[in-house]
Image (cartoon, rainbow, N blue to C red):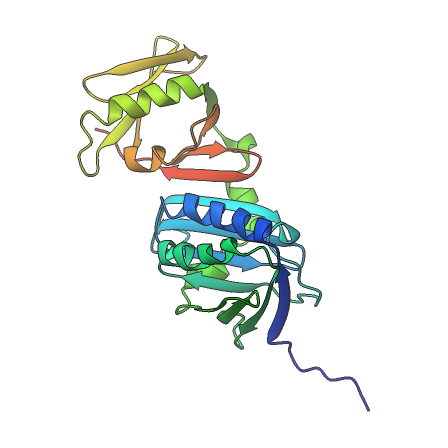
Length: 258
């Protein structure tokens, strides 16, 4: 009998509570950008992201993780084509899956995908608790974005300049920014006479000396405040700023200043 060419539409997996905790930590971080969470699973890696915007060409903020698949689950079947899981409510997903951590048993599950490689259903079962998670309607950006695009777009070699923000400086910027925390408020990067500062119209915190022309750049404060409180490397491109870490990236589109 000739081998079957039928596409595999079900993938069994095993997940430890430590792996689930790792996944939930990333989800909790991403929902600070937007409730929508998109997970694209490749054979050896996972792309997990959240964004604000209608498409990859119209993104106001984008935060992503790229990591080895084995960090969150073990799938023995080879994944020929990456498949995409989308949830419109990452907070609800976090709250329901968090209940599995109370048990130490490994989680045995199954992922069901449709003909377009979107996930219809994920089953999580640890012998005590059985949870079914439904994949929501597909959105173009789920299939449109891939790891190669992200690496190209966020290539730091194409940045105009970069600078460091220490954990102490970031805490001060965030604290000062909470004084007037109006909807759609912005922060400004100011370079004046070789000095770089970040602030608002009523205050500025000087961060460092820099060899770059005088410029004023604006970006939404609310996305900047989602940065994890640690030392930060900021890369400035023509239309966005990028906070890049070993584990994740945060891209914030700049706003036009007059």
